[in-house]
Image (tube, rainbow, N blue to C red; front, side, top):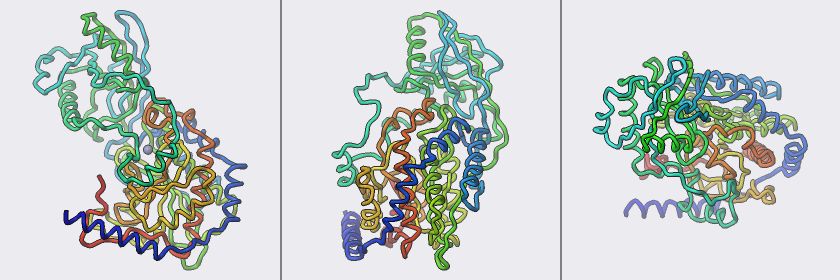
Length: 519
Ligand SMILES: [Zn+2]
């Protein structure tokens, strides 16, 4: 209870001080007009989207496609006239490089049908084409493994379904309603920032059991492990717990719930099921995770070394081409800087774009950048660039248009952002939510006390599509992305031109260590 009282008086104090200090922002409406015109009439969103999705391919961390995406982004940034463009080492890549070279899977008995499927990243290959019996692995505790001892050599192992398919009466795509936006701005705990995927309370226990099962299957000489795609009817991509240099895990495939369900029901009816599967994966040395950065240098004698940073993660999973997650964020940030560049702006501060690597395995790119240039999240020790850091803006919630911004509890910037968002009220982007939102790269900056923000976006198809084989160019809503680039460009410009940097959250001594810890 004591802590709670402390929190309340602290937030009251923050509210009062922000109220008293609220200043009119000096917004260049002429520049906002130009940004809107350039971003609407001369948009390069489609071209950027093609380059990063269809042309580069899947951009799994450390993969050949990942390297292709980085090279494409670097070349494109140079073409667009960005300066100091580079592919910058961020962190070690503990998993190393992995490419899928071939995947084929079909049921061949009791009759033939081929399956859409996606190999689990960082799992191994089959020994050529494998034709074998499918064994249903009915295991709910470690002790259940014993009944399969000696029976799995060369077999294809199907993990039973843990989720039942349920008919959905939700629309395929949706925008935030006025009521939802109001809730978002009023009630900090009313809504999760990301689609809730991990609602299962037994998640950790199941994961531990799965690791035990994996070891067992490897010891037993199983040829392939098959997983279903949960409640989604297309394969979802994910990655094994592989560490570079250790022995290759058993080949593993994610198949649609319908295909897994059909085979499971046949087997439970004692009808033998056989499959033909061939998977070829390549493991290779890929020791580092990289970020791609480029900028428009600042021009003010005193402020040019201060940095306004725009970011999104460039890595994706291996199934689709990571379009909504998160080529969309990357191309919006690149397009925002392109708009400013083509308007020949002379920002007082430097405006930099950073495309982060390795986000999907734990925000590696942005964390690496923060550790290298800004500060240590553990000791809180500052690096030289810390005091020159003006603001960070992130996009990573799919292809939907901006509806406002999360303050990440930094209520002090509310009066500033209210004014910055005003010119975009007719685009539907006026909601300010004080609450925190998680799951992506702004957290790396927030963790060292720097002002980092993520925009509120319409969900569109994000929840059912991200990390799946259908996260491709088709998922991108170009009109929405155009608007996002316009708003991002104007936020970047405002942040680069105002007299002082955006305020970070004040450190409250009695809450030392608690402020950055988020649920
Ligand atoms: Zn993402």
